Amino acid sequence: MSRRTLIRNGLVITASDEIHADVLIEDGRIAALAATGTPAAEAFNAETVIDATGKHVIPGGVDGHTHMEMPFGGTYAADTFETGTRAAAWGGTTTIVDFAIQSVGGTLREGLDAWHQKAEGNCAVDYGFHMIVSDVNQETLKEMDLLVEEGVTSFKQFMAYPGVFYSDDGQILRAMQRAAENGGLIMMHAENGIAIDVLVEQALARGETDPRYHGEVRKALLEAEATHRAIKLAQVAGAPLYVVHVSAQEAVAELTRARDEGLNVFGETCPQYLFLSTDNLAEPDFEGAKYVCSTPLRPREHQAALWRGLRTNDLQVVSTDHCPFCFSGQKELGRGDFSKIPNGMPGVENRMDLLHQAVVDGHISRRRWIEIACATPARMFGMYPKKGTIAPGADADVVIYDPHAEQVISAETHHMDVDYSAYEGKRITGRVETVLSRGVPVITEREYTGHAGHGVYTPRSTCQYLN
Image 1 (cartoon, rainbow, N blue to C red):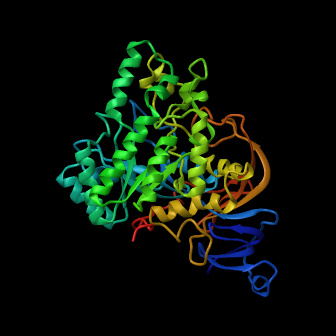
Image 2 (cartoon, one colour; image 1 turned 180 degrees about the vertical axis):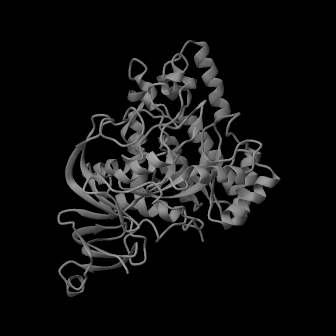
Image 3 (cartoon, rainbow, N blue to C red; image 1 turned 120 degrees about the vertical axis):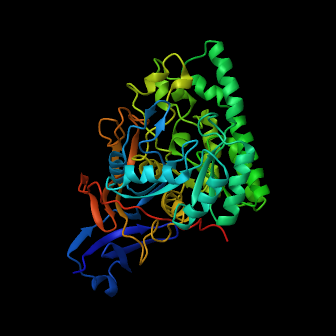
């Protein structure tokens, strides 16, 4: 027996269209759309009918950058795949792409298998993996080809964190050359980690130990320099490049210049850079530690360049880099030494709402909201049109969104397994009401009706923006 659900009377918003339409879902996929009130729509019948009058009907969000259960600085990210994907669902995100980590001295396969083990059977929504390449050698390069064939098509490298994830320019070039051959996409954490370590050492020697110095030593110019260098290495290798968590106007300028030259260079930013600033890092009584992430928060004046980059498509994606550490017992590891504060912030539950607030505030259009949060990440990481849109044949990952409801973001009401909110007390307009993942309700009128194990692993094709 096929199962049918009908969503009636809503405004369907995709990256390309806004239409008052009824959406018919059958066996976990979008079966058909028809303009509300037309004979075709009237002919739809289903066992379950959801009335979306006055609501937006949007694709489930695709968060292309999360770190569930990630080891960092002697501790682990606070969200498991179970708690993190449940929180994602509450926030209207129905697919995450997390990062499997190759340990130095280990193989890519060992890292990928370890992350499959963490995630399998535990996720409330669908998930895929990128691969962090920490140790470039001949064996690793061969493994990259095998991973692309089986649906892990993007590889992250770090110009930061010497001694942990850091790759030098030669290692980066070799991986980029391999990606140019096998169709993979290199994702880059672009900060000059060698220079930053010198500045960290000098700051601590001067007794500058508070969280705000985290932002001062990780200079915007060192993000811009690394971004420029990554672009040039990719150009030499003939490879595409995706720069993660862009935070500084100088880095945006490097991406803009490269794109103006016709290079396959892409950029992502995150809500924390759009809504928060070094003012938060400077909060007294060590409260600033809550906002320590890398790249760091920047002075408020950088925000205009990020919003402009999103409007002009010099930045294409907003992800969260969700990597939460509790203030109590985790962030506190860095009391007296900012360099020991675990780097990362919670956000997987807040992204869709914050970007809707950006629509309300006039920064972006409604369709651009869906583009940067759903459609483009799905295309960038080889999942479109299965994910990221509402169209016949697509997975029925659908959010009923109330654009008029008001809410106050707070750790008291969020579902991420972390003891603070980066947006505590922020009033926003717009709220997720109901979420379907492959046609199955995981949030039903603000009640969690999903379960661990519903979410399935999603192999990906290569980046759909490349010829």
